[in-house]
Length: 228
Image 1 (tube, rainbow, N blue to C red):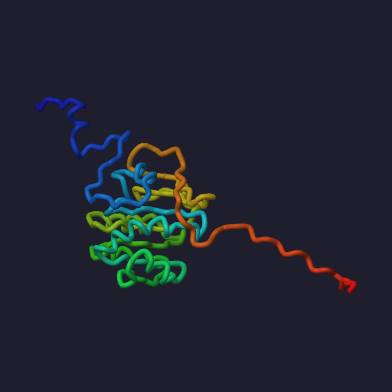
Image 2: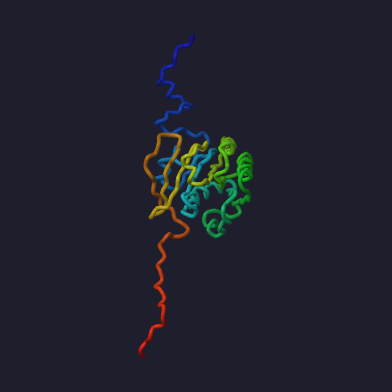
């Protein structure tokens, strides 16, 4: 009969993860470009070989600008794929972040988008993947995407509606995004490590400044007399 192994020795094993510490990621990470965010992400950056789920409160609040520093680095290795983007990407804006010849656009919808993303991840030929999925896509499709991402060097980002924040997801990293006066507010909903109770305020540039429009003066109902 084998002797029991002391708990202290078990906890020192590299394949054992303690819930009060960040879990290691064998595929590594890519820096986000934001020091405050990297300090809260396991490994100090966006995980490679895993899904990162982003839930923006609305579109156009800087969710793509949040990823561009990392995408610029990923594009140096292989193309960046955009699958089922809700709008046609603005070429000049993307050209400022990475070479357009490194950008791959895939038009798809619903389950076809999930299938296309799964095939792209399985190919191992991507530098990074961005995928937009509707709420109707089930957890089974997400699990298949997570399995396809494992073992590859490409980080995979999936955008989903904010109403799904309380729903279960196989993605090991989940972030809720909302607009803030000075940029973007990031709430870490899930990570492989201890919970993060504080919101992060990042200086992310939004494509359009959200400022109240000045109201024009009401037109007079009758012509006014002007004395000359």
